Image 1 (spheres, rainbow, N blue to C red):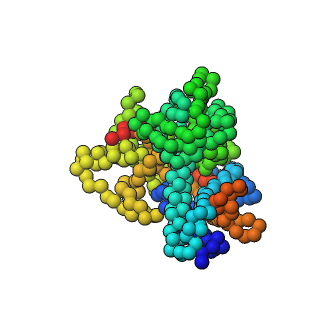
Image 2 (image 1 turned 90 degrees about the horizontal axis):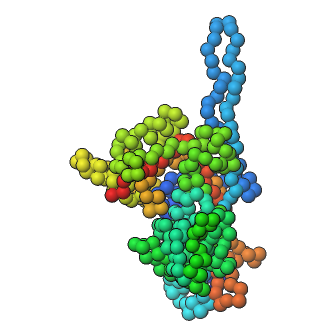
Image 3 (image 1 turned 120 degrees about the vertical axis):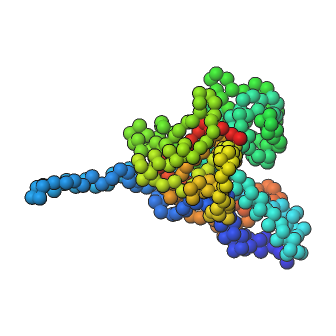
Length: 400
C-alpha cells in the first residue's frame, strides 16, 4: 500500500537527482553552459577575488642595471548575497488516498506534480538569467478593475502568483494579498488577475509613482542576471563602475536615428574583435531575441549562404557563427543580441537542489489547517561574471 512515507522516500531517493539535473541543464542553453560551484561561498555571501589588468613587474634594462620593480596582480573583491530559490509542489489528501491502493496511480500523481514543477521552474529561472535581479516582470501602464495593461508580456504566463508594487520604493500595494494571473491577451498586452477588484485609479502610473508586477514576495530577491551586468553606471557586486571601468561591458546601439537596422557579420565581428583585443576575452556563445535571429537568417539568405547548425550542451541545437553557437531565447529583450564569454560566468551555490526537510527528516508536510501536503525544493545561489568587460551587447537590431 502506498503511504506518505513511500512518497517521501520517492522524492528523496528517486526524483531529487533527476529533477536537479533537469533544473541545472535543461532550463535553457545559457544555464547549461554556466559552471556551478560551491567555491567562494562564505556564510550567506559570495566573496570572490577578481583579478584585473596585468602583472606590472615587467621591464627592460641595462646588462648591469637595476631590475624592474615588483608589481603584482590587481585584485578587486566581488560581494554578492546568495539568493533563495524555491520550488514547491502540493498534493491533496484526497488524491493521496484515492491512489493509495495503486502504485501506478500514485507514481502518475507524483510525475504530474514534478513535471509541473520543472515547467514552472524552467520559465522562472530562465527568465531570471536575463533579468536585473529586481524581479520586475512588467511595468503597468493602466488598469481597470481586475484588468491591467502592461508594457510587455514576455515574462508573464497564466497561473503566476504576483504582487503589484510601487516601483519607486518596492512596496507591495495589493493589500498584502498576492494575485493570480488568470488570462493574458498578448496582442493588447492586457492581463487579467484574480482577487478583489482594483480601484480604477489605484495603480495607474502618475508623475510621482510607477507601478509594476513581480512574482509574489520576490522583489529585489532574484538572480543577478545579464541585465544587471550591461550598464555603464551604478554598482555591480559591490564595486562602483565609475571607479572600476573594467566593470563596464561593450555596448553598441546600431539604430539609425530612431530606426532599428539590420544585423551583419561586420557588426558582430567588430564586437568580438573588441573583446579579444582589449580584454583577451573570447566569445563562445551568442544569444538574441527570436526576431533578431530571423533578421540574421534573412541576412544569410540574401547572400544565398547556407546556415550551419550545431549541437550544444543540454541537448540543444544552435546556428553557428564562425563556430560560435547562436540561439534565441524568448526572455532576451527585443532588438537585442548578447555576445558572451560563458567561461567568465559561475553559479555560486551553497548546495545543489535539496528538499526542505523538517526535524523528523521528512520532506512532505501537511499545510497548516488544510487537507493538502507540500514539499519544497531549495537552492541558495547567485551568478557572478568574473569579467564584465569581456561581454558584449548589441541593441537597435531590426526584428524580422
